[in-house]
Length: 276
Image (cartoon, rainbow, N blue to C red):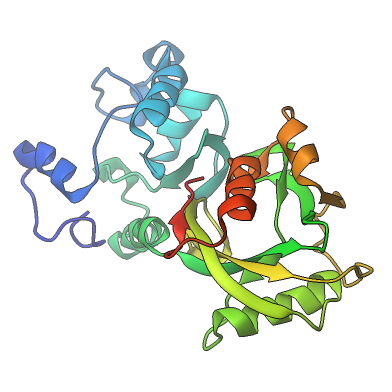
């Protein structure tokens, strides 16, 4: 863990509680100590998935790393590949690392270290993105419905936008994204009013992204462009419709409440952290 960057110094095993001060903790998927993973039985993992799920809810870690494929397979009954997993525990990402046991000598130190460094990088590296609160003359907002990153069977309504490329300003990135996604070329770039950090494993080794929300007011226009392939539906929402949409999920989760406050009070002096 020290070589991968988790700690500033090499800790003795007896100092494991010192990890908490670094923002990390250690627990077990199986409570019984064995000489090797081949000695573990299904009963050793009884209740493990439920306990880890409870830890995810109570402690809200960005990710849980499983040291060895058997730890993950024992908990969830699935045979994983190394790296980030599709399964999540709420907002908590899951990552499988090579076993550090001497019995796993077939995997050299350099390869194990590479995976631990990749896991550490995914925890600390955020991609920056920009999003448009695209409001028309009637104060309706344009939203896309897409699969949720934490549950592929669920969907979530989100604002258009995307990642900021190296060297781009917020305005340059948003103008590019709105041309690509909705065919909008002419608009006044408004202030940043909200931001949020959302953690989930992404391509490129990112552990999530920090999203910057800007107000963009437009006259009536026909939406064109080419939305992402995962956009299920696109529509304009009035504030009244948002307030009544109790069965829908939004990003940010408090979007109806936040937008109502923005329309009532105007932009805040500093961008607000709006949570998930």
